[in-house]
Length: 282
Ligand SMILES: [Ca+2]
Image: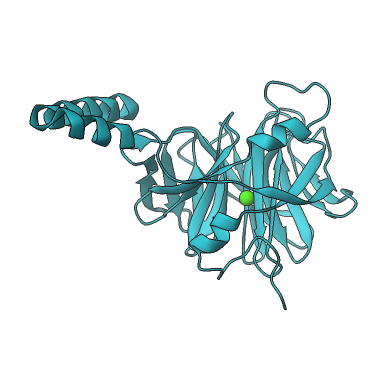
């Protein structure tokens, strides 16, 4: 519904401007396509990844990766050594639940579920389940921003929840110019911005959380050429984790055999180098 409304608004606005000036109309309408700047990236390290892991969420904390995997009967939350790729701890979900986004708030991990209407809470140190919260939407991706758990649900909406009560605090709609960005998936906070995978796309949106504006795209289409062998059509980019202490940005995908540490110069410049993806000097 929202995308139709956006399209109608776009047509109406362009028509109005056309009436004033045909040339101006072309300029204005052209800018209404996805027009945010596109950043390129380079791989600075390749790490092993369980190629059977249907990655739905990725978090880094104190040198360990935490991952949520999906699919019925194969969903889990796990702690991983990033260098070896070995699972150090794992909690498996019941067969009727499809795991989704994962995020860390203080010493608690929150894991979304796709359609079960529940968020699972775990103790960070041993991945023991310690609570459940109702979720009124589908669960896709999660991160923490400004002391709130941010949830994507497959639309252009990001919903912000209080991590102590799971009450909805606010929501925003994500857009590039006047165009809604739908199917937002796995999320990550980055120095005042929210990074979001878009389902079945090789681009990561860089979102201004105050107004939902996409300020840039990180083009990771080159990673597809680095994936050896045949893959499932669902083996798409979906996994972002940022270690601010070490300046490392991790990305991976569903069923991908690798996790990539990538550097994005444009992203560093966007934050005036307050947050870097090329390593922070101690
Ligand atoms: Ca993440």
